[in-house]
Length: 309
Image (tube, rainbow, N blue to C red; front, side):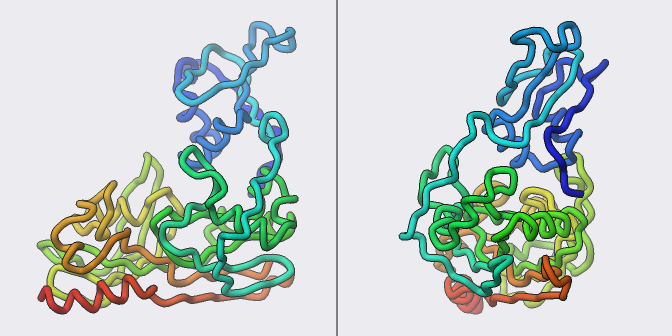
């Protein structure tokens, strides 16, 4: 469901004293990255019940803060101070898979960040998107400047961005309603015992998370997997495979990162690729499906896996 800001949530009883991140996540059923974005943009405000409407009563909550008292938590639609759109950067070369007046489908390379943040300024996909499609910059932060979802920094593959507010609303609704078909390929540690295809049903961050897994082939210590996340939790695939003892290769957060095996495979980044993306056209409702095979670096590593058998 498309959220209509500002949103207000009552704070009562046991909610007092909770970390603001936890409270907002439960209210919105949102992933941690989205909550951190709201806090970073100063869009999370608190109004104490003791003085609703008194001058200066409304305060902005930041990362790590606790809910101070009973009252109302208010989430604003726009970033505090009316932040301008990220700067356009024509040096970011986008790999356009499909272009439409309503949206664009891109093939993101590994290592390209999605949007500006503490460690990235104008060197992101969003800066390149705004350079090529200026209308995305005009959509504003409430439409995330067109971005309807995200891929991790080191994940390659397909993503869709809206060029109109109407298209963004449609795509967000489809993602939130789990109507979007998403399929990934991964090189993972084979481990012992071997991984069998099926369904991994394990909570991620206390929320239900389900991933369908198919083993396409095994070459010695390496598996080629096809994965379909039924839910969209942050790092869901990486967490699920690591919990099963078969982490994605070169995963420095949930696996071994770079080790002797990845060195032999000449693998220098997370071996995860968004291969397939399907959704309904935001305007016509027609079903659409896009595919991109394993990129060259992962194909090369998979080929070298034969020598490890």
